[in-house]
Length: 336
Picture 1: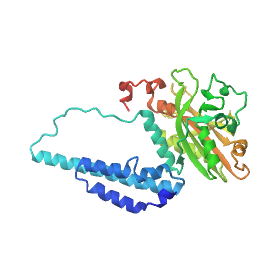
Picture 2: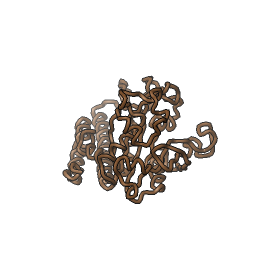
Picture 3: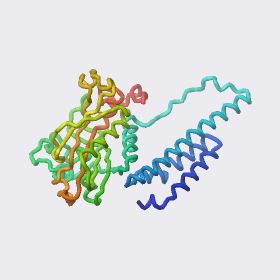
Picture 4: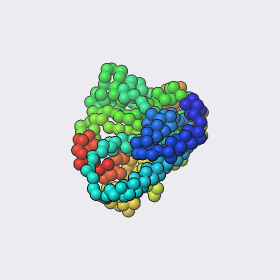
């Protein structure tokens, strides 16, 4: 990656640590944080374009050290401010006027957390288009011509050949058309279906899909990747299991369950007393999908999986109705 190679990350880290350590006020510290860790910083831009595991580990290591330095300097400045106030006879223990601060929406928080998990595993985050051709959304993924999902009662059509994507899989098709394997990518974003809003359905929803294409990939790699992902989200004690299923673009197809994080697998109302919670579909990329995008299935193998971000948020935080994410009730959103 050109931007990665163009930066001396050791020098970048040393320069950032010096700026953080020399900050004499919260404003100066915040300026240093934005410059070296903000979303427009060289580090953030390099992380979003990372292509390989080694680069991801290097950049995440730099980020962790800088975040630790910012936290340490922030604590030191707070201590110094307290001491100066005490010397001046100011009682800093008197409650001040509360100021309400904004924060990222819960779904945005979880989306960024998911991106960070995959960046740490060496995956590229792919920001795709929300508009797709019928070929990208259905045909290239070997969807049957008579499948109900193609109906105008299920899918938003812009014209005869263009739709609002019903899943983030079109990003995988575009990636495989424009990149040569190996490909390791994750694609989070909005999707659209003609669903009636209720506690578990919405015409607009967030999904995250993962695709890995390389030589020598096995289903064990799929299971290990999903296990690491769920443990990062729900705790290191989580386990996963695969069940056989069917999806048009994977063969074989599986669905993943994760041990219930409420009861620890003992059985409760959340997991319907099974000890397992259904999370989403996955599988081995169908050879016909590879052929549709010009990849030789005899040379390369791959796996893909997709999960709903709202479902992850609902399960992790115990929310019973996904409509709460969009109703803008501050009593709900303020808890996160």
